[in-house]
Image 1: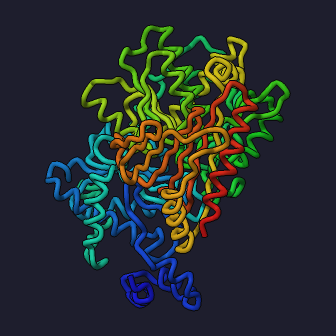
Image 2 (image 1 turned 45 degrees about the horizontal axis):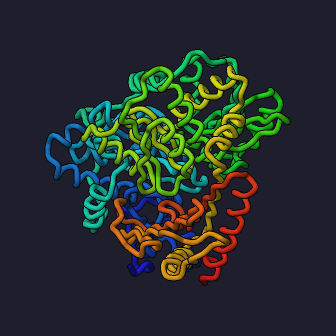
Length: 574
């Protein structure tokens, strides 16, 4: 792409509004910024779109939203009149321009004769998944950048099963987008005309009520201490209303919300980087927790599909749980409760991503529940759940990944922090009646099953140079990985880009059952393993390291050795 030519076209074409052209004029003396904004089209794939908000082809703006939606519309039209009449549900979060982008998408669809159901105000991402299934729409859109910094926004596409699109749908949509050669091809209609023609319907309370009722239907126990003291922060996102509502209606009487982070704030003024995986996001919650004597702190990310927790220890300090630990607690609570009540299915299944730890799997085995692995992303986890629904071979119980995403039940096909907040608070309240904190429960599990330890390292490399270095890192590591780490020998490695598994003990290779992706996974002979992959949504290369041992100290020492060897190799790649 001749980026200067495209820049000049945007700068001088009156199709783009005055504000856009003024913004582009302001960078005319900054060739590096022009290149970064125009050297490519913002990539559309199974994760939809995600990027910084600004003018340009490699940025999130109303023109890119309109073009992408026209591509989606062209694909839906090909599916026939019935698909067009089923329509598309659209939700959006609290970020800058989210409503405008959602409205733009709704009107492009309507202009193409496709009905759009647009939420009246911001909603959590999982409610959109529920809405697609409830209204039987052909597709769904959420305007969100999840936990990215405030400069970002995004656009996620769902298909009729309520899960994010897989490549079988994403690829033909991308082809339609790429076939749009001019912005003049994008159809337009006013909001008034769209409503008059019945092509735009505003939705809200009725869907909310049904969704909350479904969430409450997943409750497992009432023999719990509902007076457990919990501090909640929605991190200025979409979780405030639904999470508080479901906990209140479940009878929890002691939920205290962080006032500075209660209401929507697209600038995330008090938190900066609104990712609850980062313990810095808990600063206000910790301060409030100490003040009120809270036993548990919970945080949901801006689009309320991910949940993080901190638990008060015996010394009054708050201990952070990672996604593997929280997932294990939820699995233990769900399976324990279902077994006790006689509702645990004989063919029950848990689904996790390939970079998620194995403690949840070990808990599942104890209860006779099988664990399946997929590529990262809930589109893959829920894609597997959809397979179970069709075949009936397994009954889905729980899905999770280490990046603090969890779901239970069968009415949402995405990670859901409304569901997981309720179940986690319920678990804390139940174990409290047994005289245990969640820390106690976690330690009990370690003592029984072994000490599982993990570490995630994310190396951020922005811009064109960063992207190229990430590619070189993967290329080099694919050929020159270590055959031994400390005392542990490599016994198996999986290259999902090739779709191959290599067993070094038997010197054999086989096809992987997991779809192809740019992921490398290495398994050692002491039950430790690690994986390396580029992020699909951010300019990062991620390294997931896992160890297991009989003692905590031994597990931690194994991790230190792994980190030194793996990062030494990766950092040597210029």
